[in-house]
Image 1 (cartoon, one colour):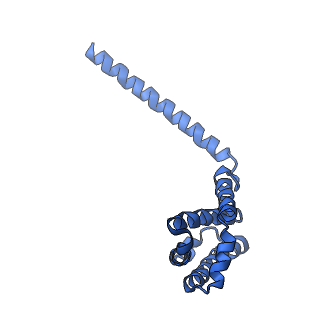
Image 2: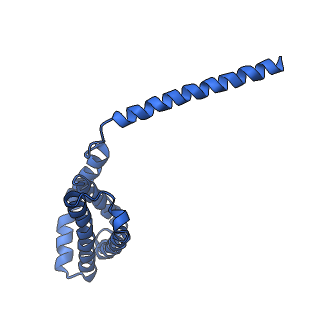
Image 3: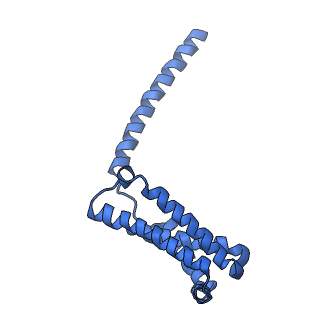
Length: 158
């Protein structure tokens, strides 16, 4: 009796493996036929709308204007670093991807991503120091929301 049970279980396991293989084959075939995801989805729309809300309710633009008028060295440094970061990002998206057709620019230009990341982190630190007197502990959260809104807006391009 024990051997019969083992044989039946072995056969059931073999059949389940065949069934799983068939369904896996079918699901990968269905995945290949699917359309690519749209660039504007609920996630990106949420961050863009949250960024707009922060800009409006926290008077973000007026605060930035006042910080610029106060000749904040930290804000000027953050702006230069952010400009460098965005320049590299637009170089990757507009020139390398759209114009040259290079989709995997990481392989050909391995230094682009670390340099962009480093300049962005330095810019974020400068902006946090410059705007800390205005919003205190809310500053990193507000700047993160603004960052995500800008990233989602830029991701619509490429």
